[in-house]
Amino acid sequence: MIVTAPSQDQSKNGPRPINMNTDIPGILKLLELVFGASLDAEGRKMFAGNASALESPAILWRLSPAAAKLSLGFVWEENGRIVGNVTVLNSEMPGRYLVVNVAVHPDYRRRGIARLLMQRVENLVRQRQGNQILLQVVKQNNAAIELYNALHYTTIGSMTHWTASVSRLRRLELNLDTVGPPIRELKRHEWKSAYVLDRQALHADLHWPEQLKQDAYKNGFWVKVMNFLNGRQAETWVATAGKNQLVGLGAITSEWGRSHVASIRVHPAWQGRLERPLLAKLIRRLQYLPRRNVQIDHPDDDELVNSLLQEANFQPRRTLTHMRLDLDE
Ligand SMILES: CC(C)(COP(=O)(O)OP(=O)(O)OC[C@H]1O[C@@H](n2cnc3c(N)ncnc32)[C@H](O)[C@@H]1OP(=O)(O)O)[C@@H](O)C(=O)NCCC(=O)NCCS
Image (cartoon, rainbow, N blue to C red; front, side, top):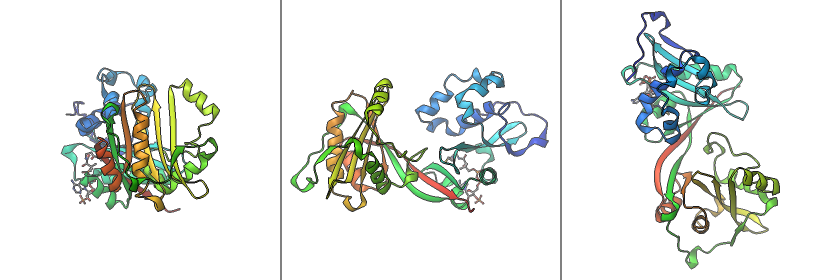
């Protein structure tokens, strides 16, 4: 429940840009109310123990990374309470903006508040010469998807987040039918081809929050030194065809104290033939790594990988649909 004291000044009712000096506690309370039960670990950390910080002077809030992430966007105020919020994030790619924290207090829904706040976002992005707005929404969230469809956002695709504990992973058997090209480690000079394969296998906007960096698969000497210093480790396994053309790729990134992150990409012409051997390879490799959780995000419509992940004892956690609004020049 929102506990801020209502003010008598009704002239401020309605939509307005976020005011960093006054709005952050109210926004956090609204987000906690609206998303509380469904917050992921990172979101919960943001709210945990913040009750006293909510009372801190604004100058302290302005220094907080959590507050900085809420600073651009719009709120809807009613009698001194924040009942609606939309946050805009810059992205590393010029012209590309992300929308997060779309929330309206349950007592104020279906009055056009979210629609108006989202239209304000669109105007803001246009003023900044932006050309794309992206967002993620839980696939089953019909209310929000209806809202975004009504505002002409189009669906790019959906990614399911799977997790497993490394100690409970089941190895995948390979039979003769599934034996394809041999799988070997990515060679140092092949990082660009690995990036190209990733782009062919997965829509660029299904990476979140940023698109894949061109050097994401670079693993030369200096990258290894930096990874070592940062407690990070990355390995990439590939399947090749013809003259060493990369057609399939499986990667694991491990960071100190965090879940291992795995991924699988298969060239469209090879789909159906490489997923089992690639995932089997990743599972064998994971069993040599520290016993932590492992996570993998994969397109939800890839039924083969869905069934392989289940066979390997991964659990689907949630599916997020990625939507995009392209703004005319
Ligand atoms: C989704 C949410 C932000 C919508 O806020 P809202 O202020 O009620 O939405 P609006 O009144 O502006 O609705 C605009 C349009 O969205 C669609 N819509 C909104 N709520 C809907 C619902 N419950 N069912 C179907 N369509 C809905 C309709 O097309 C609606 O237009 P209409 O009222 O003319 O039919 C609100 O329900 C909410 O906070 N939900 C919980 C948090 C959440 O899911 N956020 C989205 C995260 S991606």
